[in-house]
Length: 249
Image (cartoon, rainbow, N blue to C red; front, side, top):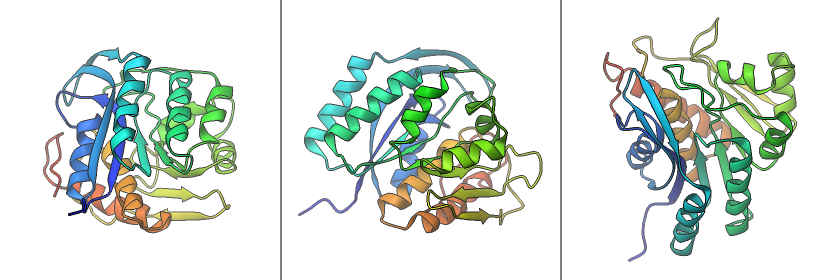
């Protein structure tokens, strides 16, 4: 009997609290009826409120993990979280494209943890190469401010939109908190306003939102619909309880 669920790959870090990173992605994939595969880019020392250390996985090991998965599984969508630097990320993306030239990559560009641990800063030219190869970029407002330090947010949005689709997460915005925006490569803009008023801050909420959108894309929903449904899923996660760790309802 054929396998009934579509495969989706997360390339991300391991969080021992399982609130963020690849285990949060896998929980989301499973809940949304996708089968999650994972490649570990880092082992972190953290819990839901404190981030102590990050131990990066060697690129050779990352490559071996990716290769063995593609030997066995058909993978059309990949969600990427923390990676050591843009150069390593570029190598990973090129490897994915070697395995499947039509693969769609959703990049969640994590520059800093919710507990303010800073991962990396890199050159803009390398990042420009990356966004030209991916399907969707999902930064929050703090991240988009730092991706192109010399540009205003409006200029940054326009620049990214000229190269790929951009889903701007609204949890960290100064006004209209929780309002997300999708800017498509075709030049269109869609606004997703929050529906729930009972949400509370969660560790890994950005990972969950990006992996929910990735799951719906894997289930063959169009981009706008996938973003809408992904936001609804993230709101259920945020309203699941009042602690820092959410339930996948």
